[in-house]
Length: 99
Image (tube, rainbow, N blue to C red; front, side, top):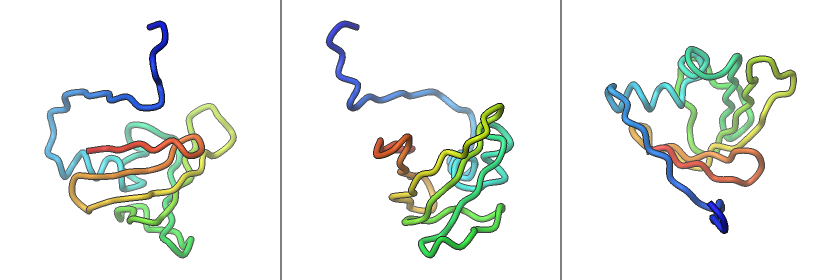
């Protein structure tokens, strides 16, 4: 992998589930905590907490607490469409697209 450009890459996996279930698994705090993170907090554009059973919306933000790690990771929700697309920042300004 010499000289590989890591500034952009795509990772695809097959998941046997409805699109709505996958979308909710990434955009609802309670769902994300079931399979990926110890604690999830989503906030709206005004930095008000979003109920843990509601989808995060565009211009929101998040705090993720990883298992066995004390510091929360913070980021921004830069785009959503409410059904099958999510974009967020990760580790600073790295953009992640989920579709």
